[in-house]
Image 1 (spheres, rainbow, N blue to C red):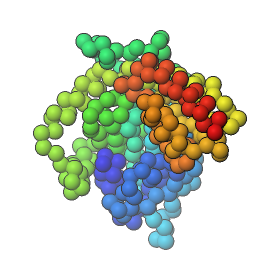
Image 2: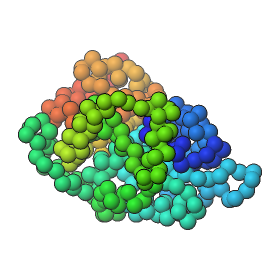
Image 3: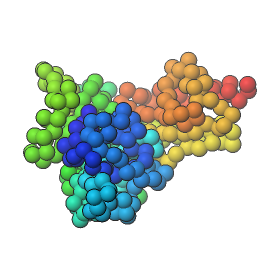
Image 4: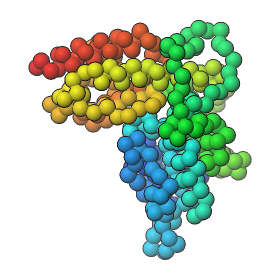
Length: 319
């Protein structure tokens, strides 16, 4: 709901927003851009990681012409979802924000996995050790890698690039439910009214907020462990047959591993075969598959998943 509330708060019916053609707000939010806000989307082709550039954004901004919708909002996604958990560099976000500002557009970030992006960029958050050992990093010696520009970034740097940011607490951070929408005082005042009208009001929300506070305090730096385990899964996939069975593994830097099966194999059959071995995988269509690591996934389970992949490959290729 945070993304949809933000879009409605930033726009008027008949406006146009600019986003990647793989953006979650465009593909996976039930047509909410149109049905909630009366806004249309100008979708730009992203790179292999689903990222768009400042040059693309600038070329997509409509001139002031009564025949054209008003370009009013740029929406980015960091990390990306469907394209495989890629992160934007700070330089790219700054450049897009500069173009948007120069043309009078607002910028919104779908930061459902923003903390994954910041940790992957090399940023370290201050935290207090948890008394519960299950919340401690247990991957072997993983150190967050810098992004391709070699520039880490944290909340202050990201916040300077956007007018609003949505953050999910129930993905890598491990909360049972919950998201945050960040913005100026006036923006949040508008957003609260919109949230209420959309049915998003809640009573006794403090119980859920307590889980969010715990996650923000203890579960951020440990995201590097999820990234390390995703790399182990990627390595396991890379060790399988690459000519027929696994034909493509998308580049990944965070906790999402997206891969494609060969044309002779069916994703649903693979899902069922892995599920029978206690391993869950999601799919995008018939052959595109996705693994996601999180704080409930252990090193032992990664080993189990690796063995399960080998067994499933053997079974499916022998048919």
